[in-house]
Amino acid sequence: MKNITFVFLFALFLSGCSSSIQLAQKDSNRIKSISFNQNVKIPDKVFYQGSRQTVGLMFGAIGILIAHSSETNDDLIMAHLKKNNINIGKIAIQEFEKQIKHNSRFANKRFVSNQENADATFVLEVSAYGIAKIQGFSNLYKPVLRLTGKLVDNQNKTIWEDYNIIASKNSNIQGIPFKTYLSKPGAMRKKFELITKNVVSLLIENL
Image 1 (cartoon, rainbow, N blue to C red):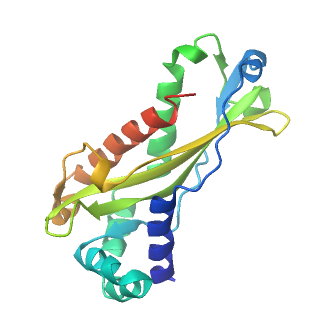
Image 2 (image 1 turned 90 degrees about the vertical axis):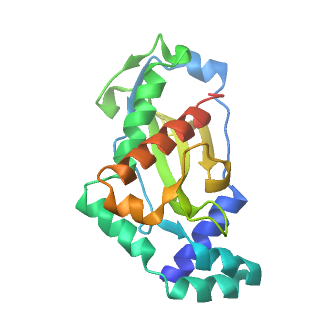
């Protein structure tokens, strides 16, 4: 299952398959109150790409499976996240809510905590997240993240949907050695907070 998960996540980052719905002005005008769904769906497994996975890519899907079969760094990441109470879903929705509330397009909207009292609700999903090597010969790693956002009205109609991705090669976040993520207090949390801020900014850029 772990190997299948890795291949699926890698394909997810590359494919970028997701539907997009632009928020129409008429829908924006009729929405007076907005809430945020605090239950963010996240993957069961974290994404990890290291040296063996990078080499494995040269040999296609079979190479990926063979390369990943002996790696356990994804388990180390998951254990560190759990031990340090780092919840990528919570980080994502808090950053998303913060940026939406400071977005001029929503300056005249009322934000409510109870979804039943809202005209529409923002829903987030972390499609994939993890840590990946910058390139094959580097010892530096960066966080990777893919977010999908929706705005669903009180008739359960999706009136906005989009996604955005930041992978290790197109990230402006400074890379650090993999072991630093696990050994330096706060390092992993800080990196995930930084990439979340960047991805959310891109996600709502054209909202």
